[in-house]
Length: 305
Image (cartoon, rainbow, N blue to C red; front, top):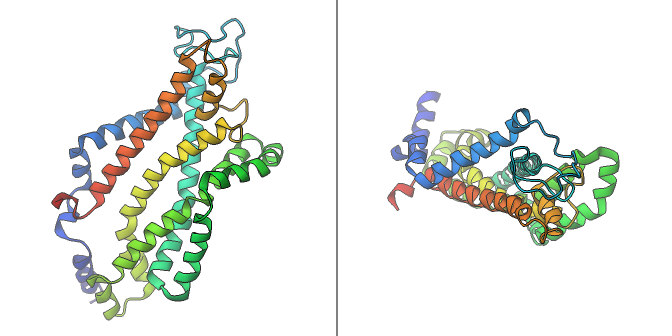
């Protein structure tokens, strides 16, 4: 009997065309699919690169300062003779780690609060929504700058570069999870009034099971899309913090710090500004296309638009 009830609710919750292969729909979107492949290759290069290209990103060579690309240095060197390719790979890992930490906090905190506020309503909704609105009222980057400026040196002294990196990620997530909560809350408010939720309540299904088995799967697409698009802002904001000297500290490289270091010697080596800047722009474009594509694929009615 319980299996029949769950089956009936599932049929109400998921139209037949939604059950089509998401992967096939994803592949049909050529721009999104190509962007995804390129992004995966960049991630693999960042992760596997150090094992293939065994060059210390912090090693200096004062005989090859601001050198042009060559066989020994495929992307040239910076103002201290450090290999640009090795530093770019390290900078990519830093940016990806920051994105991973920020979006993990956004999903765990923002999505959970949005689900509870949207489904339970009442005083729970008012309390959680006011908390999110209070944080959302602060200028995001300004709050991240404030946290990094006040606590950055202390964290670096006691926990090293990784600790500072996590501080930057936490500072960025402080003002990004309320947006995730707002998105999820709005979607949950809509879902909780649909037929399959009303049917579940009529059948005596508990709120916990409704949230986990019926509401959560239906907001997952929104969460994935929001996290992917938010990653664009995270990468840009992390680069801005590094440009201001509040992000990662030497000798650790990041895309923003590479730009900051190279701009000071722009007249001597324009190529060193171009490389990290081009990578930053490429990441932003790729993630934007991927986020838009995922939204189209996971939208049950996108094929009808």
